[in-house]
Length: 483
Ligand code: C5P
Image (tube, rainbow, N blue to C red; front, side):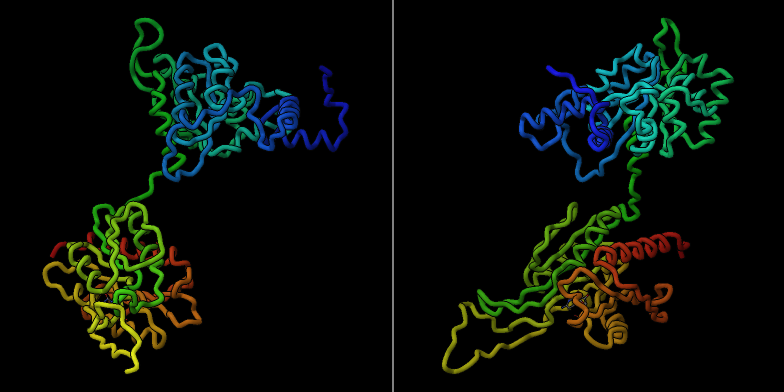
């Protein structure tokens, strides 16, 4: 087969090939082979690099864990017997949906092969600072920056000494010097080396530089009869530490709190096929439920008929009418916080038809309306099981603040979230909301009424802001001295 001399290609084709190969982390020759294979097979999808084995089948791919964000690690494998554990570390990281690109130092290659690291990472492995295939566009800078975290495992005494002193005479040390990413080191060495004054100095310097260390653990050494501190942490420990740096745990300030929320419209039956409804979409109440759940609360959402998916991790009770909503709310008590975001129909038909009402020559059937129970007022006025924080909504089309203030007093709740729902605002059924939080100063029963007006936000942002206010109020209360 004829061989191809890249040098003889014209400049435009060369530039295209260089950019494409850099993007795919392949050598230019590899990229040309891939392009030829794609052409022959008529494929548009890029093939996997020759150095990497085929991607795992669906059956062998670990279960995707929810909607975890993608993350990537440059894993520098140093030269030590613990390097064999780093092969397992590649697997452990990939199980956590963390992409891994490996760099092997010269010494590391005495213990593990680039082929093994490539087979496990499904990526090309890098070994040389002066590799013409990756260095034409400063590959060590890409390896240093095109990742979210750099992990060094095993981090040998020599590699740490180089790092502490800013050396850059091979690919690994050049990456470590050129990076602006967080670095996690998993040291591994003989206990005497770990305790040596030079290593102690280097470790202290690296910690001052913001480098994070995991281990070393204490235990038996590879050297017969030797034991002490110096064993590299296990792969699973390093992967967990890496994941914590990549995806810091989200605080759960409402953990242990039970939050009850109503949302959506209610449907009040006229007869078996007709009902009275309103334009509420339920989006605001659902967003609050999701935000409270994300903050760690146990959430019970009582929803009228809506066209929304149940928020993940939330217990949802689906109802139709105001009376069913009240029943479910009462059944869900006790709760620490109750948020009544539903647009409950004020009235229902007293004489609900058992059969579909017919048109008659006598004209329209008389619809008699009776008042629905006011769920917010009922729960606010409970003596036994009143949730410590009760929040109502006031959807108004005029005199917004005045109406909301009087609603706060009339219904007996602690806060009112007031919003203008006149048709021009597009709030009903829309995605944005402009709200005012109305409460009593210092939470006192007869305290002065305060109005906090928020800028226009998405309903999700309103929910997050409301939950933040709730967290603050709950935290402030828990800090109050017991009387
Ligand atoms: O009186 P109005 O309907 O404007 O009050 C709105 C507030 O009262 C909202 O929080 C709403 O969920 C609640 N409400 C209720 N039961 C009703 C009517 C309103 O819980 N029957």
